[in-house]
Image: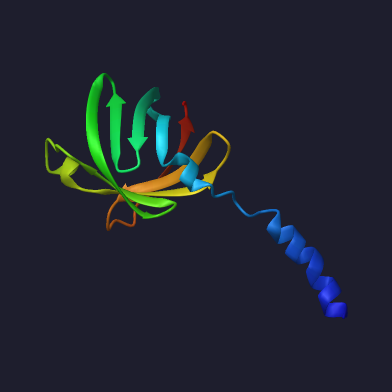
Length: 123
């Protein structure tokens, strides 16, 4: 009985740190991603319709297919790559969600190198 009483506070404490994962809320919609490149803030806007993503960055629009691996993981593949680098698929994994945003990690498929970012739902 003493062991159970000792473990209850630990279980309750651990449950407070479970990250929210409402990934399905972000399969469709209009989004904004901001990042800093050489000290300059850059913004990408994109619209995702489950299996298609249309991205606009610095006035240029590009389309990619979206293949969902699970509710929180998908792979992006550019539909019209302009060079060898754009031919490589990008693995995306949603780590946590909130009401209007999600944090994610991404990298080239097969690569151990990952970066993190945050996306905001704008509609």
